[in-house]
Image (cartoon, rainbow, N blue to C red):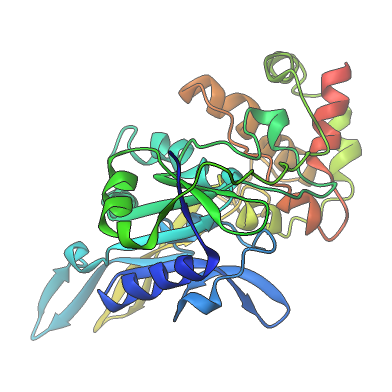
Length: 334
């Protein structure tokens, strides 16, 4: 018989985790927005809508120190951050389009070099996903191989029920351990029915056809047509669950400072600027082309995965109204 949990006991679960010193991150209201953020108690959990920003910040912060340095008495000391101090984390209320993204990013962060910052956070984090029962015109997860009830990427998965509460499904060892740890908060129910799933706006795209078209249309007029509107603000990349470009900079002075990773975006004008002042992608059409190429060709060529989960954030919050699913649909029809 399936195990279920009431909404009240889900809040009790969060409170119990916090009491044990576990960091719990989940959707919460912050003024007019819903964002993924550390929760102070279970009542802060807000499952009503997809958070504005993605959950990738739990593994890949917008800015992080990767070493510090100090010069004293003519001697330079370099220190690494203590990754053993990273807390055990439970990421709760994660929609399938966000839960699947870390598995996509694992490939690039453990490819030719194991990034200890990202991978250590991944190891110490348990993801509690939740099925989507509503969607708007920007949602297109089903078009890129995901779905409103996709379990991939979740350690524990919640299915909303009619009348309230959730079915609780363990997807792997992490999920099973967490489920067993808080067995007292669960109940057994065989009669509760799941709520109807969301219906995304775009049902399917031929991703292989798009990949083939991209390979043969590097200089197509479509790039100029689309990118003439692009402001190069980078909002699409910063909100995306799967975008992962970053820069590394040294900050400080002669006496000391730190080296940091900062999020970057291929839509920024200086992203490909060389020290010689040559910029191989010096106009916006080339930069927007690279965004689409990276997501639907380059990453697929290298890792056999699409670098897009269909969350729709880049559509909702683009200040000039560029719709990536409309771009893909146009390519798909060619």
